[in-house]
Length: 67
Image 1 (cartoon, rainbow, N blue to C red):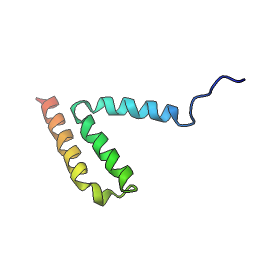
Image 2 (cartoon, rainbow, N blue to C red):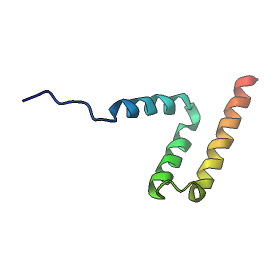
Image 3 (cartoon, helix red, strand yellow):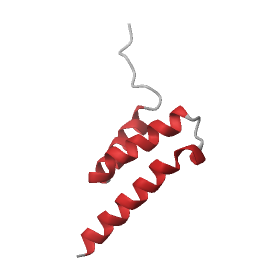
């Protein structure tokens, strides 16, 4: 029996996890956006509340970082 191989997209998933960690306090909003996109078959118009919340969070984070 051959050793079990990593899933085809496992490296992509690991990379996504690192990107989410870099979002710091915005990561939970990012994950909500991802959930919305999955539920709506990638319909960005249906997820505008989450998109705007993530944008606002990132704007706050950038502002805090520059002060």
